[in-house]
Each structure stands twice: as structure tokens, then as C-alpha cells.
Length: 145
Image (cartoon, rainbow, N blue to C red; front, side):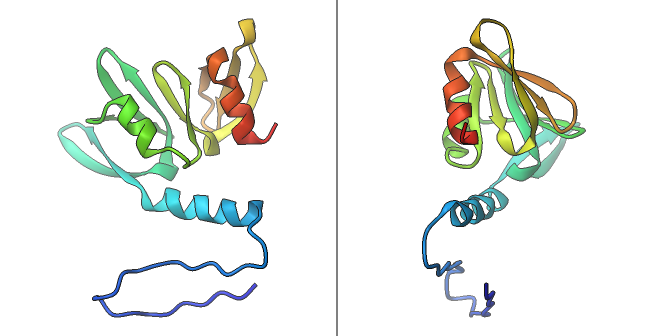
């Protein structure tokens, strides 16, 4: 595979062009990674505003009318509502795992069946997230199982 980079003037819009013989899963994976890297959200913690890349976010959770971003070691409050974040992260490896949670599947270490048709996802940082049974088919589809 050949990789080329071309510098352009500030008056032109930046773009990434992929030329391929066939649009397959590998090409879709590359496009997904590029889209995820470009999305950043503002998170609030201790009177500071932080820029957080979607790739660093493990999950979003709504608690008592507030929405929080959970990263590997930090928690940030975000101003958007959960449904707004769901729309923003659509097609970017995130999905609604329950009424109050949106999960980023790139940080899932493994999943296992739980009670009453639910699943449990264990994340790379050891946290456990319950996936409601109505969202299990979405997870299976995203993981290709």
C-alpha cells in the first residue's frame, strides 16, 4: 500500500482521499478511526475546560440530570444531553447500552451474557457496564457476532 502526503495552501479545505480496489471492512475501519480522531468534546472538571478526543472516552452516563464523560482515569461533566451525544457519536463505534449509558466499543475488553438477556461489558480499565437486553442486538451487530 502506498501512502502519500501533499501540502496545500490555507485557502483550500483539507481532505483525505482513499483509493482502493474494493471497499472492504479494512477500508471502513480506517475511515472509522479517522472520524473518531477528529471528534473532540468539551469536558468540565474543577472549574477547568478540557478538550477530550472521542477515542479517549470509555462511556457517557446520565446521572441526576447531568451527563458525564468517563475516561480511563478521569470523569468530566459535559453540557450536552445524552440523546445529543448519541446523535453526535452515531457511526463512530459508540452505541446506546442502556437508558442512561452510551458505550464506546473500542474500549471493551470482553463481553459476557448476564441475567435476563442482558450482557456485561468489561472495559480495558476494569469497569463493568451492563448492556440492557433491548440494546444487545445493536452490540452484536457492531461486533459482527
